Amino acid sequence: MAHGLPSARSRRAQRAHFRLREAADSSDGCRRVLPEAPPGESRVATVTGSLDANVLLRLLLDDVPEQHQLAVSLVTDHGPNAVSDVAMIETIFVLGRAYELTRAEQYEAVMGLLRLPMIEGRSDLFEGAFADYLGHPELSFEDCYLVALAQTERREPLWTFDRKLAQQTDARLVTLDALSA
Image 1 (cartoon, helix red, strand yellow):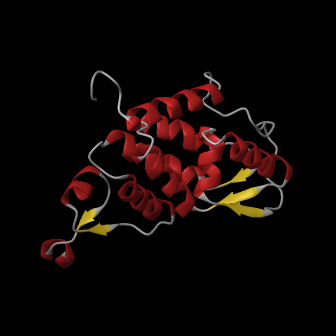
Image 2: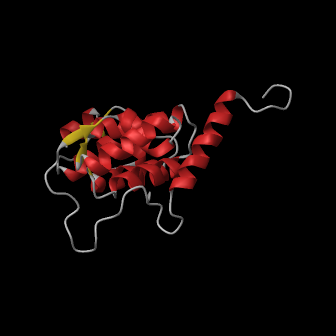
């Protein structure tokens, strides 16, 4: 911060935070650009396409108004659309790194997207990954995702050389003793 002015990066984070707050319903954190599926009804029918991280970011941030409107139209009028795990992980990375959102704000934004009826993604997997990510600030989302993926797909343990990951999650450290057991 020079001369008492916030840096361009912190101003960008403040604008992103404002837009996310503006778009969220405070009672449950879900965006109201699109309606949620009625209780007991299927979230989506047949998926018609896929969304990349840039489209997800425009939906969340509204930092490029023209692209935001196009993204909303795409999702509401040309959906449902799938979101790959890779696109969601990239979105989380950008929200944290470029827009400086907290982990809790990243959770609110991403899970809000995954709750939309016109977006098909692996919400249970991301809920599990966020549980470790929010509970262990020294771990990356990518590592937490790998642990959750191993659990979800019943391919445990996740073997790692990362001591922090093994100490703070269900991942197992690769050692001679562990391999001998």
